[in-house]
Length: 121
Image (cartoon, rainbow, N blue to C red):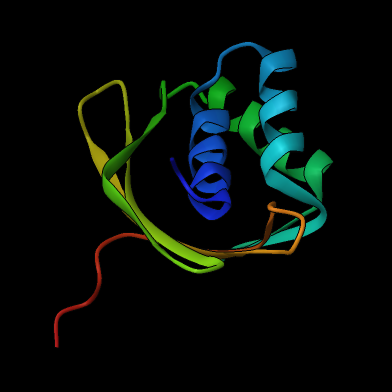
């Protein structure tokens, strides 16, 4: 049986893949705390409504974007990390790395999202 941390991470990933807006809203509510935030190198995301808007924009992008989990989700207590890939309709892709923390309510409180490969030493 998956832990609450893994369940929240999997629901978050599923929200990015869910085409139905109502089903997506239910996934966001289940996995993302009301005041949660996503920290990126660009503008961050704060709260469920902002996450829903970000996913709407992602899904409406004319490049035909899709996001997929790459490998297992690593869970250690309330923290998690996973690799992802964003694919474009033209076959190009961008890898990503996300790490986050789940609060006492079982929902993501903070997520750090990195786009692109780790730099070489």
